[in-house]
Image (cartoon, rainbow, N blue to C red; front, side, top):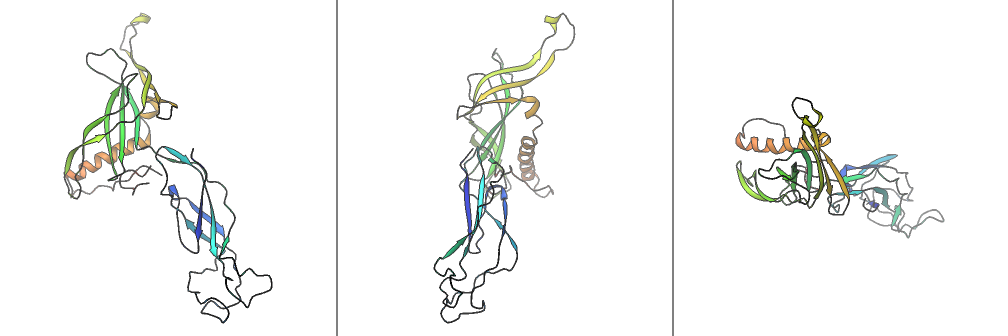
Length: 279
């Protein structure tokens, strides 16, 4: 999990935070000793800034510094221009020197997870001709930050192997309604440590019948050394994985039939996948 982030909105500007988090802050009114319509002798001339009498205003913050495959929590606070800055005709004790007034920090947000640029899903027992190793069939989803394209390709990997590798894939050709074959780096940097599952014969139980299908599972080591269990029973029904695969296929279908009306391409949530505008 990443460090706690803090953001401040200043003087009516809107900044924003990953995942489109919105903050609500009480905004009390401040008397200034002058009218807002223009300059008053003894005070600043610049009064043509955004103003509101609302008790609450909405501020949206965006964080463009997030890293893929990381989790963050956020706090925000409102920072406004001191309406009494530089004024002379004010009540005794009024702060006329401080340029900005800072509100209290909000409570920390819920964790916001940024998806990795390369995600892997166990989809079944892998089959490599002539090999006795226990392979697992993985679906690899690759997001390319340079062009915002998400590509899906399948790979088989066994214990001791890295999931994915550079391979050709069908992608949209820039600024055209055509596709092209481009070499994409699907390397996940995730190492398969152990696997289990697949077809289990009933012969050892002296039972006649078709083999039982045990969902494939793979113990995978991430680049940071943590171990993750990829489970076919869970991954095959993962809604995000299915959405990414459908989006990729829809893009290719749109290229083949550009006049055919289809729903727009979306992307991975908070992850900035295809069509989402990045992270």
